[in-house]
Image 1 (cartoon, rainbow, N blue to C red):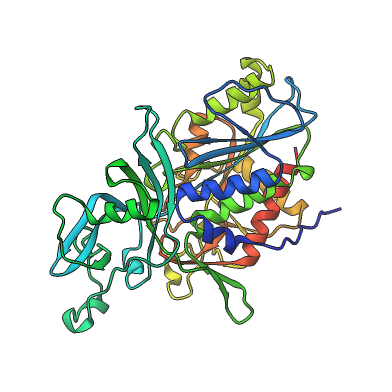
Image 2 (cartoon, rainbow, N blue to C red; image 1 turned 60 degrees about the horizontal axis):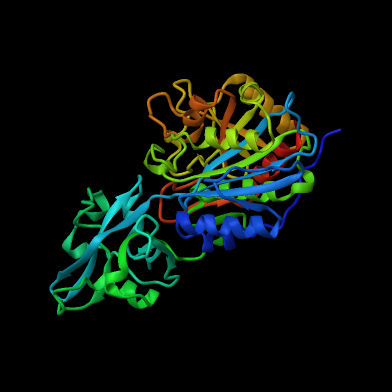
Length: 437
C-alpha cells in the first residue's frame, strides 16, 4: 500500500525573512534544531555520541551539519542518508572602507557575489546583514557580533529612460559603476573615519577603532508572499537555495519519523554560488571529517566507515529551472519541468549533476511509494547548464547521489517565484528519504 505524503503547515516565508545572510540562516537553523532537542557539538573537540540522539555542529558560522543516530545503528550495517544544500545566495558584499562621496551623495562600494541577475536589484529597498569582527584580548580569537539592520537602508536607482533611450533594448551593466547602492545624502567632513564604519559602530554600540573587519551582504528585505489566482505561487527572495535548507531541516527535526538503523544528516554549506572551493564549502574535507568524528564518537572503526560510505546515499538539494511560458524555447523539447508538478530530478550526461541511473531509480521508487510527484530535468543540448553540490560531494564521497530540488522561475534574481505545492512535495521526499533505509 502506498504511503501518502503529509500535509504540513509551512512557515517557509517566515524562515526566509530571518535567513538574510548565510550567518543568519545558520542562526535560524540552530533555533529550530534546539527546539527539537538537538544537542550542540564543538567541531574542534572529540565527541561521545549516544544512539537515538540528535546533534548539530557549526563550522565558521556559515556551514552546519545536523544529524541523528538511530537507536539500531550498528558498526557492521550502519550507513548515512545525507541531504546537502547551501546557505548562500547571489547578491553583493560590502568592501572594506566602502564610503564613496559623489556630489552630495554617499554610495557604498560593493563587490558582486555569485551570478546575480543584476538588473533585478534596481529600484528595490535593500538592507545589510552579516558578521562584524571586533577587537579582543586574545589575538587569534577576535570578538564576533552578528548584524542585521532588518529595515530598508539602501537603494540602487535605475537611470531614467530619458537619459538612456536604449534601456529596453538591453544594456551591459558595469558592476563597479552601475551597481553601487546609495546610502545617504552626505558630504565628507571627517577625513579620518569612514562613514559606513561609523554607522556600524553606532549600531553595534562599539568604538570605531574596535571594528577590525566585517563580512556583510546586501540583501532584499521585502517579505515573501503568496500570489496567483489560487494563491499557488510563492514570490520571495532567497528561494535558491533556502527552499532546500528549510525542507531538509524540517524533515530532520521530525526525529520520531527517522529510520532507526541509519545515520541521517542535513548538511548546509556556504559558498556554493562561487564554486564551493573554500574551507566552509562542499569542496573541502569537512564532510569526511564529520563522518570520521561520528564514527569515532560511536567507537566504530575507520574500516567500517569506508564500508558504510559505499552503502550510503546522498541527495543534493538545490533548485531547478522551471518552464518559462514566455521563453518556451529555452527548455528541452521532451523534458519540460513545470511549477506545481513536483520535485525535479536533475540529470546531465557531462556530470554537472551527479545523478546516476540506479540512484534515479531508487528515488523514483521512493516517490512512487509515498505518492510524491516528480519530474526529470535535462538542459537543451545546445545550452550549458548550471552545477551544484552533488558532483563535488560525490567526488569526495563515492556514494549514490541524486541532484534534485523544486522548480523556480527567475533563478538568481533578487526575487524568485516558486510553487507551494512543490515545496510540500520536496518536504515529503526529504521525510521519506530519512524514513526509509
